[in-house]
Length: 356
Image (cartoon, rainbow, N blue to C red; front, side, top):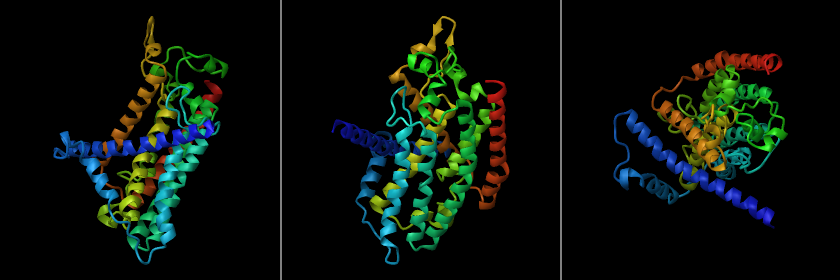
């Protein structure tokens, strides 16, 4: 019984986190948008407009659930749940600190990448079941975009897996820190340095992974339908795209899924490329900065600091770059990112063979 209660508690905590993060992210995005445009953003509801997002969410949850008369009612109601659950379940294998992860999976990278891919199915269902031409176009655009950009994203992730020789995200994060525990030594991680800090991160252990991370980051923007890859939503062209017909709680699930996806892809990149929970501060002679800023508490702090920095860049890009045209979107994927990703994979193989 305690076993099941533990899993229920973890599931509730993760859901609470995604909800709270969405509230924070909406407020942060409004303020970043305002700063970029030299405006103030929310100011009236609460101190500095802090309660504006709560007011908007409360209003949205009171909206009527409207189902178009010509829609496929079952699939129309099911699509938002699929979109959110596919992202929510991806958090199960992500490590928050050393030894602190919901589920330890030896195929964690494969699981996360596979489960997140299901979101495209939910988006396509939302567009098709609405029986709305704008929604259908948004759904079709999203499927073509996500399926295409999953290839460079997946290949860039393989570059890391080839060097780490593991699909376990916890072990991959451990390899990017200092040898402070018997567990790390037991796993035989000879390539982990005693210096620690940012020098132990994968992008510094193998410099070509900087390019792989840039490829992954650009692809992750497309996976999230974030600007400049927000073609599936494209308010100016598709009246909001695949979720045009959704209201109330159903729209809230789609909205929650999008912002949770931002954090999820950011955290995947942090774990695989940017050291995970490990501190960026290295040991310098007798100054043991890495030891002083390590541990479970510090690990959680560094995880949040890195991921929120990545999310901030995602928001900054949205309010800086214009939306790409569809043909430019596909050309970037197939003619630039995919060949570069395969080139990085070849370099990873040679690096593993000749250097490590």
